[in-house]
Image: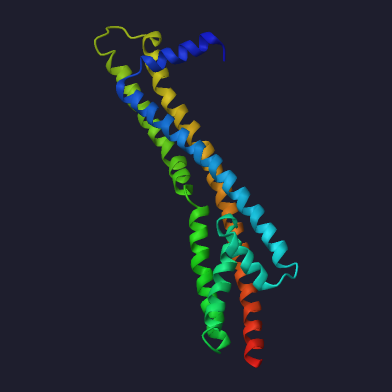
Length: 230
């Protein structure tokens, strides 16, 4: 877009009605927040995926569970979601085992409940701001359309006292109004794409977490049975 076109665009915005200007400012603010959350969520999910893969490799490499647990406790603020789930489950398992010789199923159920609670907290953190992206994607076009309708109404109302209206007289007002629709789509399209992508990524991570919890519960059950026999 050349300089004259830019000036024409800013001139249209400057001459828009007050309501249209408010709509444009609102959509600009929503778009800015949307892009901020898009980048934040991209880094968060990328980090969560890398931390999950790292811990899975370490867990299935055959390391002792107590060693893994001590490492998680010693670096609690630097571990990933899956490792926090593991830490919560193993901590509860050890706590129940220290109370004597409870039933293995009771010990595993307690560990599973602890992991489930941590799992919910981690998923809440991963899915934070996704609702905002969904709302932006669904509402922004309608907000822009509202600004367009209001602008067109304003443009035609200004022609009420004109005896002979021409296209040159009404075109600037309509162009001003259509900017709101364009900005609404500009805010909505990236938000919808990001929401769909990040929802898919979050669901895949949730499946990995749940699969790990089931497999880890089986391991804990075998440890509980062996401890009971010992």
